[in-house]
Length: 94
Image (tube, helix red, strand yellow):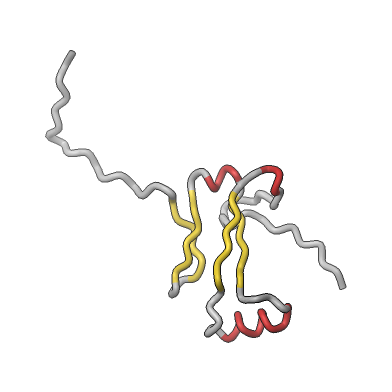
């Protein structure tokens, strides 16, 4: 049986289908072989313990993917939130 799979953007809030010519960013992470479901899935499909993910062009300008040993692959902002400005800040007049 042949499945016609159309991967989508790794951002769960984005419905963009994978189109390499449309840009974006590919990620490759090693899967944790100690997880029983990952080891079984790898043995069943002949993979080498590597997971591939894609962020579309728009999402890759705002987010990146990181591997977290506890939570797995996570989508995180490229720029962390900036700290609030100090209220007593004074800007000189021209």
